[in-house]
Amino acid sequence: MRKGRGHGAKPAPPSFNGGARSRAHDLATVTRALLRNDRAIRRIEASARRSDTRAWMMQRRERTRHLIELGGLVQKAGLVDLTDDDRATLYGAMLDLVARAQGEGAETVMALWKRRGKRAFDAETEGRSDP
Image (cartoon, rainbow, N blue to C red; front, side, top):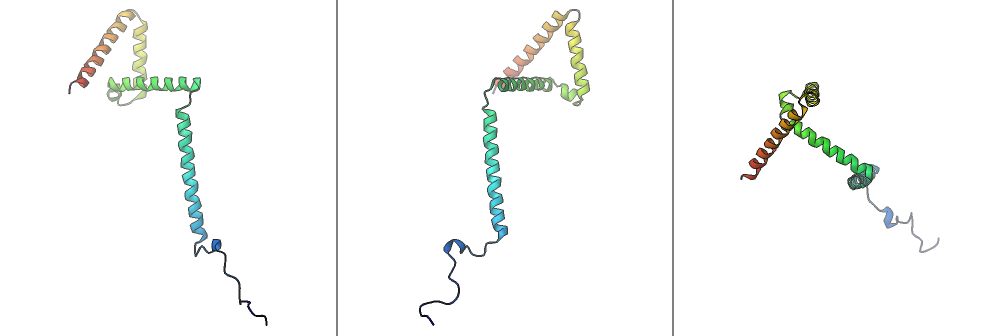
């Protein structure tokens, strides 16, 4: 027999002495990391979309903002509540407005609408400025 030689296998290197971690734990860790990375990628993409300065994208944003403002006016005028949010009724009313604006006395009708709208905006502005 030789002397100095131990019995059995050598101890595992420290990198493999992780204890009793299971594959399920490792899978959960990797899944959490992937979700974290996915969220980071989505944040970066959203930021890039918001700062996109291409001409067509700027025009699209401007048009979207304009349409939202027009929808706000429909809401502010009380048409949504009056029609119980019936889109067909709203569209029909707007078509009737267009017909009136294109018919006889169109200038008078447009001037009347403009005065009413300015008065309503002014009244709203005065209501906000009074504390």
